[in-house]
Length: 101
Image (cartoon, rainbow, N blue to C red):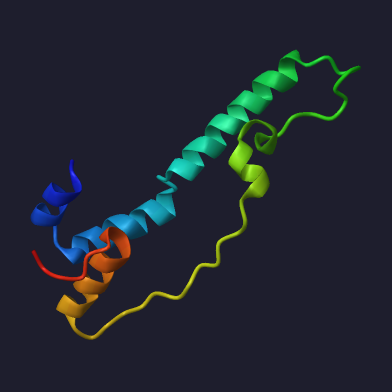
């Protein structure tokens, strides 16, 4: 689904629910990378020569961004009293747009 179609078909409340669900369920590209890194590291470890590579591989050894990633600070949610203002703030943060249209 395109961003424009998504904006036309769901309201901000539903969008925020999907964002919350994603945060709970871990449906992110970063988590996909981590899962793949775990599998790849396990495969490497099964086949590694323990005399040459004594230390087992971990996800950071096969997923480059894990070595440089910093922990993100999770901010408290910003909740506005006005639903339209809340929608504009979300749209601006996610899509770089603050006007309706």
